[in-house]
Length: 85
Image (cartoon, rainbow, N blue to C red; front, side):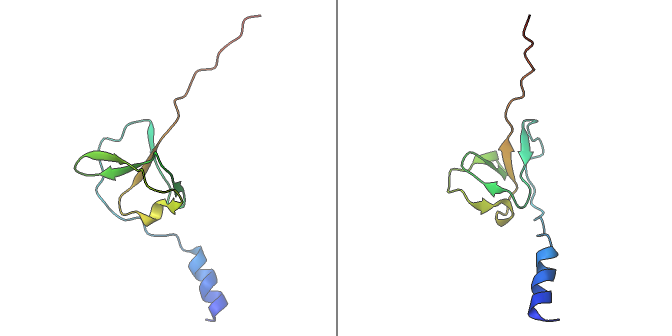
């Protein structure tokens, strides 16, 4: 296998999700970030002892670089407002 084939094969692999015990009761308005999503300020890091810690660090890291799962609060869904005619 040459270098080009090896690089191509490495690009096809997805990173392994670490098996870290996170909080068992995740609020419904939180969603877990996928491995390739960028973590930003305001996201939450799962902490087995305390639940969630607010990430206040710099942005730009992929979620797969963290040992613990990363969660993002989803925006509140609002019902459509009907206009009367």
